[in-house]
Length: 194
Image (cartoon, rainbow, N blue to C red; front, side, top):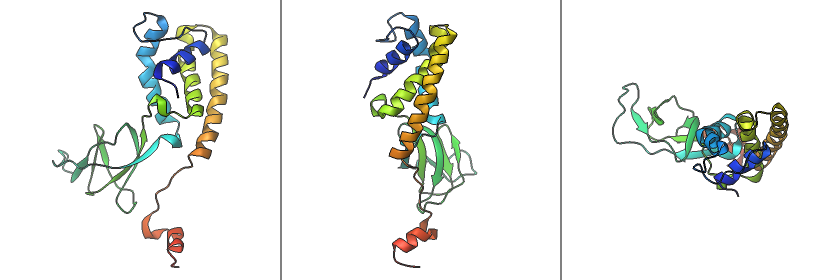
């Protein structure tokens, strides 16, 4: 698995730029990467519905009641949280909730978050890393090369690697659905009841 600067360098080399070893090397490539990398990474991970970044976490309830009196409880966000997909109770039922400053406000005292997590670069599967490299290349092509042909090539690679990554993601990480308690016919059959 690659480091952050190996990924940045691969994206820069894909658009005829120079490799970046640190944000302080004084190059245009380093300045562009420093200004945009974190935002682009979060956008890539949270906007494409990747199954491999979905996590589940029982949230930690804060002792203090929320300032917003519409809600009884507030919970801290899960680790490496990017965005919430759903908040469910202990029985797997979706809850009404609000998100303020990353904290979850709701009227249930125990909640589980289904959320998108911010993977570290070393945790990217190879197929996701390649799609991310070309995602970066597309966004950096104009400021680095200024050549429309380089952008067109990067767009073609981004399209192909994204499609491959979607297939691999679905195959390696099928979507996970929480069973809705005893209402599930599958669960009832599994337990031996009809």
